[in-house]
Length: 299
Image 1 (cartoon, one colour):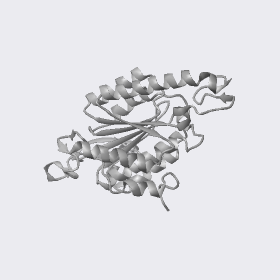
Image 2 (cartoon, one colour):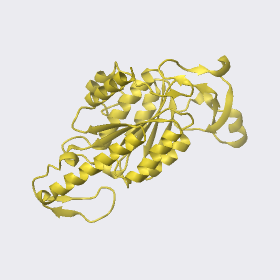
Image 3 (cartoon, helix red, strand yellow):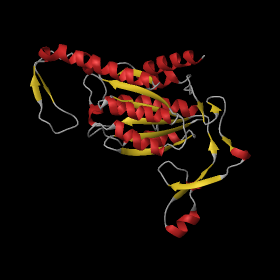
Image 4 (cartoon, one colour):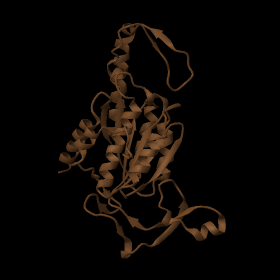
């Protein structure tokens, strides 16, 4: 059975199968893409315990601790991996919007799993944080190929709902990241831009590389409604609005232009990659174009 199910079009996977995702930064003293997993001193040295999380290998459970405390804990070792990628996906209510295309969340699902497969195919580590009203699930990064099953299951079990809180949730995610690496953020960014900027700057201050994939629906970008339309909020219980789209189109598009420019400017100020994505474009094409540009810029 295909663990990715219907979340990814095989054609999209084929378009990115031959591409790589390398960090532009030096990651924990190692140049990404040039080194694979290494153990300090040539062996695995015990570092500390941490609570068991879904996706952890059973062989790493410390049964002595379990016998004494009835708690499942994992033995952690001093291990260096050339690249650790944390995929952070916004699962707030607004990400559930989709009319002529899949929803923004479904698009983010497909794109994030394509990138996870690339990372794992490089024998690097991929993890996942699903955000929305708090960190709803966190899958620690692992470098084995079978870890894709765990990541895909976590996304499959998620329904976009509730208010956007990515700025606040990123603060929680940052505390869970044990090793500096690369953070791949998928969101429509319908949050306080000022607070988002603070979170991105904090990630950068911790020497993480950040890629912001700004996912929007074509209707949001063009406001192509022509008939009298009812607009309903997807994140709050506010009253719906009935209006003539033509009467507000110019004002909407002006505000949208300002919003997009602010998000792009924040990324530039924080030295983060900004990747706009519209859900009417095939995921494979969007990712392939970005990864090729990124690879060319690194040469």
